[in-house]
Image (cartoon, rainbow, N blue to C red; front, side, top):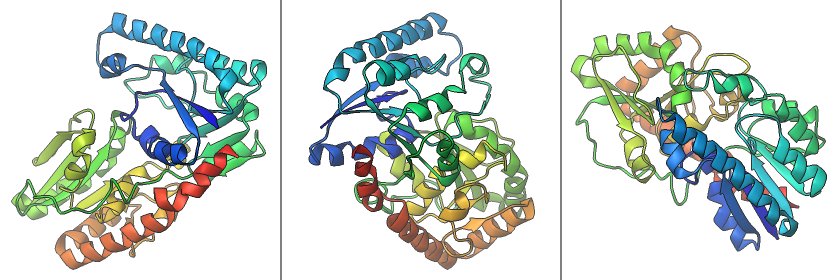
Length: 358
C-alpha cells in the first residue's frame, strides 16, 4: 500500500504533526504501508516564516510550496490514499484537494486537531487570515474518505459533512520519547511552574499572570516560572526563565518543570484544542493544572491525575497545594502518566491509527 502524506511544515518542527502522524511512520512502514511525505513550507522558509521582514524569501517559499504540490500530482497514480493534515495550501480555496478527489479519484484521509474552520487571528497571521479561506474545511470533509479528528468537538463538526469521522486523539510516545527520566535540575531547589507551546498559544498566558505574581510574592526566591516555546514572551514577572524549544532537548527541558499549566479561554476555538500540553506534562509524571475546556475535561480527572481550574482562586489554590506537598506532586504525576499510557499513547492508539487506511 502507498500513502502520500501532505502537511504544512517541515518534518519534526510542528507539535501537531509530530504527535498526530509523524510518530506513526515507522509503524506504518512495518505494516507494509509505504509513506511518501511532502511539506508545503521548506526548512529555509520555515525559519523566517514568523519573523518580521524577509518578504522576498517568504514569497519565494510560498511559490516553491505551490510548485511542490503540482509535482505531487504526478505521483498520485501510484497512491492508494492521500493523507492531508489541515490543508494542502495555507491560503486560498482547496484547489489541490479538489484535484485529488475529483480528477484523480483518490481516497483522502483528512486530519485536523483544531477548529480550523473558524478564524483565529493572531499578530503573526492577521494579514494571512483574510485569505485563509476557512470555509474550505467543510468542502474537504465532504470529499474525504475518512476524517481524522483530534477530539469529539471536532468529530461533531465533521459529522455534518462526512459519514466517517474518526476520533483519532493526539498521542504521546510513552515508550521511545516521553519517559520520566530524572534529569539534573538547572534551578537548584526552586519550585518551577512551567508552560510549553508555540507562538500562537502564548496569548493564553495572560490570564494566569496575576496568579503567578501572587505565587512569586508568597514564595520569593523559591519560585520561578519557565516558558519553553519558539518565541520569547514579554511577561511581567520577577523570576521568569525562557528556554527556546528544541526537539533534541525537549524532554530534558520539560523535566525542569515541577508543575505544568495549560490555561485556556472558554471559547469555541479553544474547544477544538486536543490537550497536548497537558498530555506532555502527564506523560513525564509532571502534575498538570489546566482549564476545564474541551477535551481537558476528559484527559484530567481533577484531584486524581491533575487539576482543573476555573477561577483565579482555583488556580492559586491548586498550584499552591502542589508546591507545598511533594508527595502529592508525585502521586498526581504517577496517575497522570497512567492515564496517558492507557488512553492517549501511541501504544494504545496504534490499531486505531492504522485502521484509517482500510
